[in-house]
Length: 316
Length: 267
Image (tube, rainbow over all chains, first blue to last red):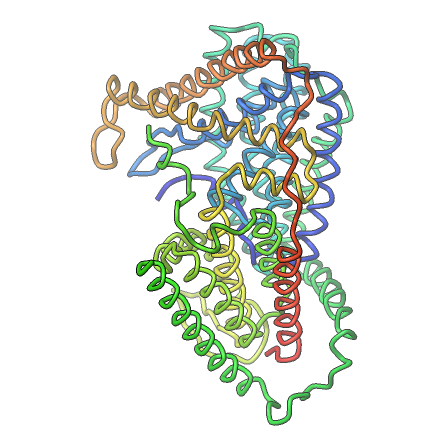
């Protein structure tokens, strides 16, 4: 078993359409704003810088270290990207990483991509930024503050994002809140430790070799208090809402039920046709059998057509 | 390193490979949306959707077995949906106990679980066929066609271009580590303490990012010297012909019809 953040990439089918679409809308709005900010501040440099760093985060996720008994720790990278690049660039980089993982490697679904970018990109980055900046300010930018801030940012980015995944699964009615949220939180509290250790190691290396990248926020555009507040708010909201939700699953069920009404609202479209329109096909069992037979016929026909075209091609 | 190690694109001569990437992307997204919108327990609709994707797999010449093997990727996540079998209220099916825990499976619970797994499995097959039958530049063009910002698509393109270079770099770092600090295999003694191993890996990650930042600078210089001015230019895409629109229209109509059936015959 690998201690890989696999549970972070939600596949299609696990989120309800309403939850997916809401998260898509939020994600699109934030990523569009990040693009605008970066174009203004980085200008023409941004395409190569963002592209290569997205590739680096992707490759960095392959790096692992053995923990014990065949398990290993991995990197997600939202925290280190945020510390090195500032929040806006980190959001864009994580968007590209998660996007390529879904589109090319089927690591996470396409309809669920909005939610995955939201969790790993937006939440991960905003939380990292809020935690890191807070610790840095509190310690007055001393060396150990940098490392403590990095470690905490890494751990919280994983943990809060995991809480988000748990909450979304519960909202979709895929997983009960009182199980999904504690399970996600528990597993990722451990995975977060691996992330924190690697992040500190990376910061130590960069501190020794290129201190200029870490100091004064480097040349990358910084987030300002807005991102800081957003990160803090997300972290607090999820940290407070999740235990509440898992303690009172009824509340979530109520939300899910409301969503059920939304789904039912599509109903009228189908009510034009009464329950048993097709003569003779009045129950679900018969419909399943008919669908099965139709399916077999279609597959058989396709196989015949395929065999025919292949023979023609080899003959030609 | 060979490109094929990562790139899921499989070179074949099939009608699916030859189809325009824009059409494939739109239809794959429509298919996945249909799966998501189909209500729980709409078995006839799932059968028809399964047949649809099976036929596409047959025509793509990727090999149905190959696609199915890759689709096992979603399996670990199934665990997340497993508890729903026991927590949804309804007609009890069977019960068993682990220690003092008594778990009672309900019929709606089992139905919802099976629906989630089936929908997820169908969706991932569509995504696999899309990625394996479309080269990445085609996907980039399709992304632009469905309205992604040009800048974002350019970043995607550059990321793909350097993905292999940086993965290579990461693999070299890992080879260097295993040459110097003992085995990285289960069952064999590994060097150093846990914190030491973690900090070595962290150093590798830091090194990788540093190299990436420096490489990005060099690439930027190279782009400047070739006349890059911040504007991302790309070849105009060929116009969609009438046949293309017909295929898209027919596909979406078919999916809409299946969705209608799904809502008529839900369990």
